[in-house]
Image (cartoon, rainbow, N blue to C red; front, side, top):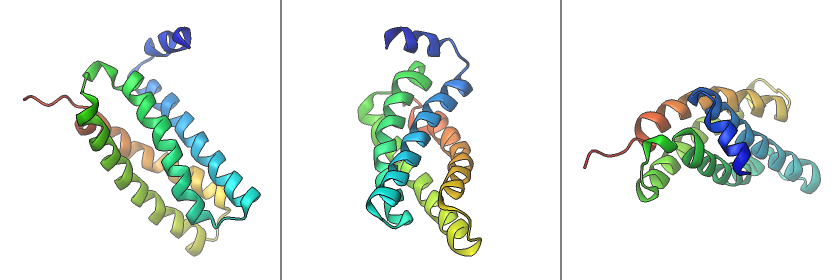
Length: 136
């Protein structure tokens, strides 16, 4: 694990974000797929649990890798990033609802597209606010 982390730290920050975000998105997609296919959950409900599980992957990865050089303390970064993630999730749910109920697209393809769109917003907010070290 240390060797992989060392390798990933040599990548540009944007690629680190893509790797961590990709792992979180894959986690999100898999949780949703398992709940919908395996337990017959409604996709929007499954998306909530998928978000919560993926948040753990996302925060851990971004704190240890993507934004580690900011050295923001966890007591600051965790609640800020959770707020960013919740706002991103609300955007996710609205876009996902539109894709499912207005455009009638497949739930997995819809979620994949929505996750890509929301990732851009999340990166900007995380970099410039959530993981930014406070001056005080």
